[in-house]
Image (tube, rainbow, N blue to C red; front, side, top):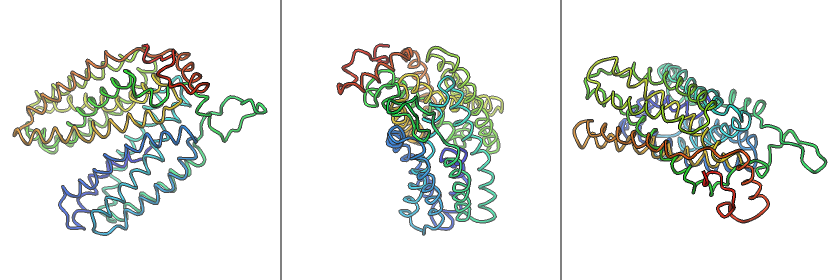
Length: 419
């Protein structure tokens, strides 16, 4: 996770300027080329999740990681062509999502059935955040001393020498129970998809639970990332210097790690999805403090700390609730679809719309009012989340799907729909 696209995105800040200078492009044009793959790559996660559900984590992770390292090296040799750089970055990001992000959620879900929240927060959220925090200054030093092309070669070598051996020698899934053929288990084989309890992918996407959950996650991500990605211009409009904003972003990153860990602990001990509500309330309060902040450092740090905690918690809460509502049968596909939607709309589209609104209205007041309203809507929707299904209900759904070809929507056991 420390060398996944989720961590490497922090290096973009230090790569845009040298690439623009070498190729004679504007920084806005170069930033667009870097951002397009970040927005499009998550769309491959439902497909990656389907592959992992069907063939197991190792069969996807090992060859995918080798190709991920190769694609990273290819970025270092592209010419001064927007099409070449865009395609190289897209391949690099897509393969990283397939080989790492498409795999780790399913693996953590299987190994930590009673502590998934803590597993997501520590092994996925905190690991990528800490990795990004370490890689950002190292990338800056490498770009200044060796150039951006050599930096990409070093990143490719790191993936090949660190991530690939980890996937090859350390990655595994729990051994399934003995099967009827001889009663022996093959440690190399992951559990059969049909043996896992859960709700089918297409059925899950039609449930109230998934629709409300996806809406809440999109709104939370959209509000938090709108402030984070537009922080320099937003807070400059409110009387803060670039140095103040830079320090506040560090506060946000530290708070995001704390939010990830706290969310994992809270969810593992909670019995209802409404445990998410206090975190969304922090989002609303943080946005209100941003609106009221006018040059005071403590208001700036408080607002960014609250938003950071929610951004971190959201990355843990999303996969946790997907697992609780829909089980492990098609978990990879459902989580991939959810994360892809959140990234495309919440991280990609809403911040752009927020910035465009600010430019059209000549200030951020209207934008902040809209973000505050979105946060309040997200808070209300958390109370519309249905209760968790009982484990035996998801098991019955999986059994019905295995024994018959009738769609789950027509079966009597629909734990999430009934809830």
